[in-house]
Amino acid sequence: MNQNILELKNLSVNYGEHTVLDSINFTVTSHSFISIVGPNGAGKSTLIKVLLGLTEFSSGSVLIFGNKPGKVDSSLISYVPQIKTMDRNFPAIAIELVISGVQQRWPWALHGDARTKAENALQLVGAKQIANRAIADLSGGELQRVCIARSIAKYPKLIIMDEPAAGIDAVGESDLYKLLEDYQSKSDATILMITHDWHIANHHSDFVLVLNRKQISYGPPVESLKEENMRRAFGHIGHDHTLKSF
Ligand SMILES: Nc1ncnc2c1ncn2[C@@H]1O[C@H](COP(=O)(O)OP(=O)(O)OP(=O)(O)O)[C@@H](O)[C@H]1O
Ligand SMILES: [Mg+2]
Image (cartoon, rainbow, N blue to C red):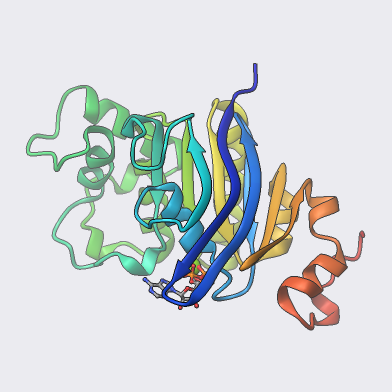
């Protein structure tokens, strides 16, 4: 049975006098792949921070697994931040980072159930062979695989990702989205992903939220990503960027 993972009603967020999100309304049911699309400054990351309980909202209501943000069992949710927010020189090896996602603290010993879960997750994302490599020595794509492994290792019900393909080349990006879609279809997880690329959103999502401070549209990609919605969100869009199938 599908259960509501997220319910947002008339959510608004102000930073001082600036309204960054205005009357956002959408519901996410379990076992779905959701993309959030919008231009720079549209409020995408702010929306995620509200869901994670990191940013206060000004009005409306938000329920996540039926609870207020920040009051949710942490084993239910994983968060993959934008890669550039992470210090690449952090002195650790890949599997330590993955285990820290299972047990919510830094692993002083690399054995036991948490290690097994971490190894399984690395295997799933095709990164088992780099388990013992230093984080500083990984390529952008390798590091992102390790971060995805960290996010799935504890089998969360909701994975929230902010631009997961940032810094990854085109081939790595295509592999990454295939991997995510495959994982999502085999597990009972819901994925909520920010992307600036609406072709990716079109290809991989069940539902797309188009945002530019206001909610432009929310629905299946074929509806939500219509050209008129893209124009409202992004202003002028180049010919090459129009989704021809619509
Ligand atoms: N803590 C803050 N205080 C004041 N303004 C903020 C704060 N955080 C974000 N903003 C502003 O809110 C707006 C939305 O920012 P946000 O980071 O949510 O956008 P975004 O859609 O994620 O953009 P990008 O695609 O560039 O990542 C921006 O104008 C930003 O400058
Ligand atoms: Mg952002």
